[in-house]
Length: 149
Image 1 (cartoon, rainbow, N blue to C red):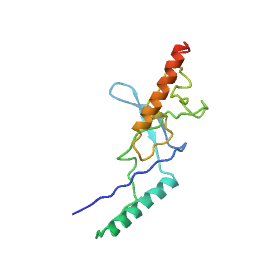
Image 2: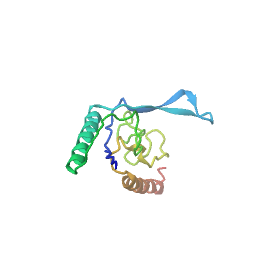
Image 3: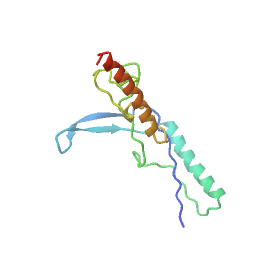
Image 4: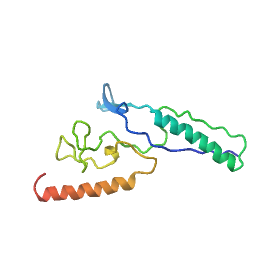
């Protein structure tokens, strides 16, 4: 019998992890594709090492034999909750979206998904996405009633 134990953790927000438009590649419709720049920082490396050690200790305490742990993640991730790209914030120079997920540059554009998260924790973000969407819709409706949008 074989048992696998897998850990999940958050990749912290860092300026050297970003997405940009690849001007040299297009998809089958001729639309430029995204180029993802992503690497682990010291926190992620330490967290991955700790996950491997903790998994080994857990299995050993449960009586498992022939335990092999690893702490060498593949480039990119195989199990993620995608988020980011359009960070929320008050400063348009450091963020794309306002606190209501409205773009700083295009006032009638709202991005109501996980794009506004600067990072994504290991928990499923669906309920947070839904709560932010309700909050943003309330704001949007108020602004529409005032004819501000």
